[in-house]
Amino acid sequence: MLEPSEFLKEIKNIDSKNEFLDYIVERVLRNDYRGIQISQHNRLTFSYFEKLIESMFEIAGKETFRIHVGDDEGELQPEAQTYYKIVKTVNKKTGKGTINSIKKNTFPDIAKMGFIQRFDKGKNLIDEYSPRKGIYYVCLTPLAIKFISMTKFERIKSFSDGIDRLVGNFSNDLAEFLSLNEYNINYIDISEFMYIISDQRSSVTWNDKLTYITAYRKLNTIQKENLDRLLKLYCNPSNLRNKADKTLLRDYSNWKNESQQVFGLFSNSAYFKVIANRLALN
Image 1 (tube, rainbow, N blue to C red):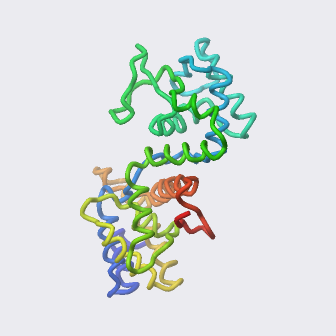
Image 2 (cartoon, rainbow, N blue to C red):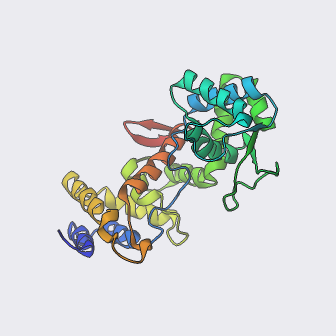
Image 3 (tube, one colour):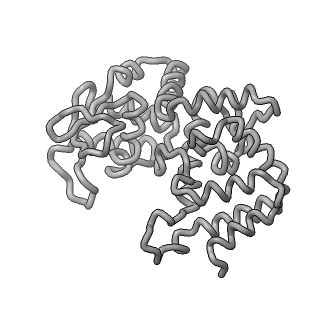
């Protein structure tokens, strides 16, 4: 097995004149190589979101309710009965959703989208962008209450606006990129999103990303497959597991999972669509 650094040399050797290959090698050497990180484990669709909000309103209405505190280990907490009813109802309607997944994965997203508020043990409203605190209570926001009486079109628009709040200005920047670039790059695929678009460094501009996507598309299918293979080998957490500095670890699977999540969020927005696994403006 080659040393990790050798994989990076092999990547550059795929095409020594390709700007993208120099960029991707430089990127994976950085600790912030994964770029945009929003909701790694959550696959939030409009359909699931709609049924969750409906179930919460049906069971809890406008009232604040206690959630299950800590990991679910099979022992129910008497104070969280309302929450358990919500979980059971959502699961029955959608076929997914557990005590742990809803409170740990879905609630943080829809809180940042503006549809729920979360509170600590003393029922103090938490700042969703502050360091993590213990969550004990949840309630629907006025926006979520309004969502219940919306038409289907209004609901989709409200959900899309929530995604924009979740991802910040990123969706606006991406929409502008897909509509105004001089090379008419009017779609991106998941690899381009993962390797290039997800880079959030201020030093990497959208014009830079345009250059790198153009260079990436010059690679042929075999070269791209070789690139994927070498990146997976380099970004294997077991490579440097025995090193004292854990910041050196790289994980291709986590990186791709995060990129797929954001890609999926955009595909559920009213402003984007996915055709043949390519994200384009709607």
